[in-house]
Amino acid sequence: MGATIIDGKAFAAKVREKVATHVARLVDEHGITPGLAVVLVGEDPASQVYVRSKGKATTEAGMKSVEHRLDPSTSEADLLALIRDLNADETIHGILVQLPLPKHLDEDLVINSIDPAKDVDGFHISNVGLLGTGQKSMVPCTPLGCLMMLREHLGSLSGLNAVVIGRSNIVGKPMAQLLLGDSCTVTIAHSRTKDLPGVVRGADIVVAAVGRPEMVPGDWIKPGATVIDVGINRVDGDAGKTRLVGDCYYASCEKVAGAITPVPGGVGPMTIACLLANTVTACCRSHGLAEPE
Ligand code: NDP
Image 1 (cartoon, helix red, strand yellow):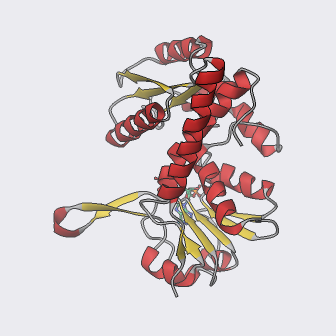
Image 2 (cartoon, rainbow, N blue to C red; image 1 turned 45 degrees about the vertical axis):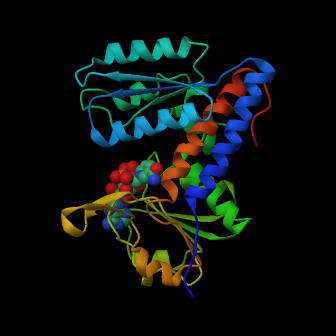
């Protein structure tokens, strides 16, 4: 019997519906429209696609979407000035600077110049610290989406062994913090981990965030484990076309796992849904209103 497929697309649609309902209530009852500003510096094709789909989803949820597309040679001073303006703009509740930035810009400096209350990506050092100490924060969208799917599928995560493969600031580390917050026993694996297959075999929950196509095979997976595949890798497909694959080798993992997220259609759609949810949360907090659940 194959694994249950965790349908991130369907789950994300439900989250987006709830967001839209909350937005409609904010507009009707309080005359407030949540606003999200997305800043893109440069012409990276993947980033352009992400920014476009974020803008579309924001508008579809009834929110205000503002896009700032800046020249690749934009100076740090100009970018920081734009962020200052957005921080001061009362119609903007969420600010997202699309990463990666061109090499001449200091990513940490830029991210840390965003008002933490508007930092809907949850990458500002204040939000990282709040998350790490178990306080109310803005939670990074991709790990948040993964956690929501795990809770939906497994109920309580308490006491489960979780292995996160990858230790990036945007996925691996915050994912580990969230799992710890839900009382998992957490291992963070990375490129220097010894006996990665053995480490993964001990996991009830595997979150793969590596960026290596189909790296995790089914025989690393403990029978019945829940597998969340964050990876998005474009590889050569049939007839000169390309196709998207995850960090897990789906065909073999699916035979052993209890449940698994597909790529595409798993984590990706949840990331955007969580961005919308974070924007509404930021808006509610800034106005002292009840946050969505
Ligand atoms: P990074 O490149 O920042 O981090 C990758 C991590 O994987 C690093 O910690 C690295 O270890 C580790 N790693 C690399 N090779 C190995 C290996 N052979 N064995 C064990 N660990 C290894 O990537 P991101 O975290 O930004 O992204 C990871 C993946 O998730 C990518 O495919 C990305 O496209 C995808 N992604 C998907 C999103 C979505 O919405 N679905 C959102 C964000 C990312 P070390 O630190 O030692 O170098």
